Structure formats: C-alpha cells, structure tokens
Amino acid sequence: MPSPRFTETAARVRNWGRWGDQDERGTLNLIDDAARRRAAASIRTGKAFSLGLPMSEDEGIQIGLVPGRVNPWRTMVSVNGPLSDDPEWICSSEDVVTMALQAASHWDALAHVSYGGTLYNGHRAGTVTEDGAARCGIDKVGALVTRGVLLDVARAKGLEFLEPGYPISADDLDAAERQAGTSLEPGDAVLVRTGQMRHLRGERTRQALFDYAFPAPGLTMGTAEWLHERDVAAVATDTLSLEVVPSEQQDTYLPVHLLHLVEMGLLQGQNFVLDTLAADCARDGAYAFFLDATPLPFTAGLGSPVNAVAVK
Image 1 (cartoon, helix red, strand yellow):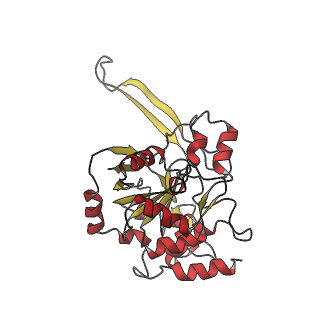
Image 2 (cartoon, rainbow, N blue to C red):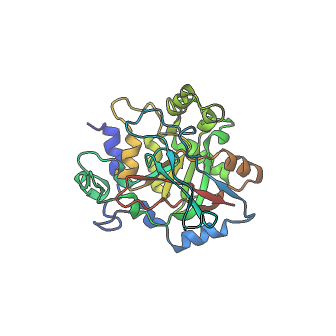
Image 3 (cartoon, rainbow, N blue to C red):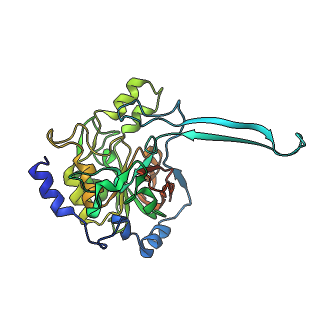
C-alpha cells in the first residue's frame, strides 16, 4: 500500500486529463515551438557534448540487478561479403545487436511502470502485453528537442560527487538552479548531476558496477513537486535508478518512478553521462543548452537507448 506521504504528493502533482483524456505524452506536451526556439537561442559557441554511455558487452553496466536487462551484445552477420559476382567490386559488412532497451543511457517510456493496475492518465496497465505497450509507449515521444538545463547538485554543494544514498531535496535543486544562473521555464529538460559516474571511470569490475548501482544518490518525492511547479518536460540523471536508493521510505519502493511516470507523465532518463558537460558549464558559467535527446522510435517499446547531444 502507498504511504500517506506518497498519496498526498501524488494528488498534488497529478497531470491526468491536463492534455485530454487520451493523452499518452504527458509533460512532453509542454515542449512547444517557443521552447525549441529558446533551445536554439542557447547555442553560443557551437560546442557539442555526447551524453550517452558506450554500448558494448565489455563496457556494459548491467550486472543482473534487473532481471532480463542484458548488456548490448553485437555480432557480425556479414564480413566483407561480395554484393556482386565480382568479389573485387562492392563488398559489405553488417552486424546485429541484442540488448535491453534500458541497458545503457536511456529514457523510460511512461508505460514502464504502473500501480493499482493503472498507467499515466488512467490508461489500463493491461494495455501492456507480450506485444509491448499499446498505450504510452516510447514511440509516442517523437522528437525530443528542447532547452536543457544542467543542475549540478554535487558542484553546488562544493563536492565532486554526492555521498552514496544521498537524498536530493527540493532545496538542493534550488541551490543548483541558482548556481546555474538561469531560471527554468516550461518545457525545459532538466539534467541532474550527482557525480555517481565516478564509479565507471576505471576498470569496470563487478564491484565497481555494484557501487555505481547501490547505494546511490538520487531524487526524492519532494523533488517531484519542485519539477511539477516548474513544468519541466523531462528529467534525467547520471545514476542507474534516478531516484535515491535505498528508497527514502522503507515501506514505499521506487516512489519517484511512480510519481514521474504514472502521476505526472514526466519522461524519466537514467545513466546520462554528464561529467564533461558539467566541467564545461563550470568553466564558462553557461548551464543552459540546446538538447536533442530523441529516443529511437521502437513501436510499443517500454524504453529506448539514447545518445543525447547538448550543444552550447
């Protein structure tokens, strides 16, 4: 059963019906032409930053904590194979990949989680079947291009990284927004840096990957209201779970996932690579940028890998 605190917070942030009874895109509806023009106006130097993890079996971050979430496995199906009768003419090489759609840097679809038999906007959880998500799938996202704002919570606290299991509060986001020197506007995407990817800098041993996953700093239930008040369109972090783990309340598991995806319809991303971008933001004081974080349009998908690009 949800805790009273969760239930009260859910009632305050719920967006059901805000964009119509059949809506499946949630807060992405806040990204309008003005938001995209604001994104374009953020480009000053032209510097670009890739925010995606490398995708390979050896560099994968999954260690079995989420059943079935396997690291990318790429194999060759053709190596310099002739495409004509003349083997000295055109030849082709191709490969295939097997991976969980949420194995690396990714967005969760709104259909990724449910509770009480319900998805975002009151859609039935039963619309997710062996065929995938008939409602609120990742294919409903479309182009995700808007202004991004980095909230470097660790640096705002004078730290290189947050302590394991640190619960990020609304006050922490306020401090990071002040440091960024820019006020969030409706339709912005927020990238929250904790510094947790320090665990991925060296050899990716099983222990290092476990330390990356648990315990981890992350967002708390109180930050859902903060994001709701500012009409944020999407939020992502540099952690495996986005929210603080262990959960802030022992009797409520992964409450931030439910608040974001089910109640708010807020797109949620994990494992975004933010350290290089953060260092550049600290150097020039510009924490807002053009962000293209469009997911792959997997029809009925419950998530999608993404190599988001920030342009300053």
